[in-house]
Length: 223
Image 1 (cartoon, rainbow, N blue to C red):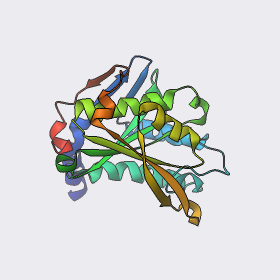
Image 2: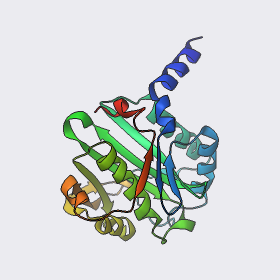
Image 3: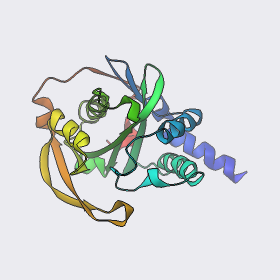
């Protein structure tokens, strides 16, 4: 049964990641979701992330109608696990608040063993925005990157009209790092790029983040 064999290979390759956790003092937990939790997160996303006239993402995935929306949502997260390699990985951590899933915080890297660089992306249910959660969940991911994995830099970017995302970056201590261009919905728009170094991260006090299960899967990140 080739399909079963492939499934077992994927589980063996990324299974230790299922035990990885990041926990904050204010009730947030970041971890890989189960398929059942992915289904719940589809409903969370469907309930609203941003006003329909705005598009904060590089790819306009929230525009897709049902059932394409649901299929592509699942395909994206399943593919990240199936295609995981130490040389190229995307850690898509569901964000839970007091046990309830409310969004995603991604940590991605290419050639991490050499470059020691990570990128981040995220989304948060509209009902939980404006409460400091976006800053807390990205801070937790950065703690995993810098304190756990030994990253040397973290990068991110946001459209100029996405003041909330840019505000999180500035509040966490990123520095502006040039201008980019992305084209969701077929229209080119400028982005503000940001960069944080390891020195920047260590230059100020950070809320404590408990990282659990990293030792069992550290080799999957490529050093």
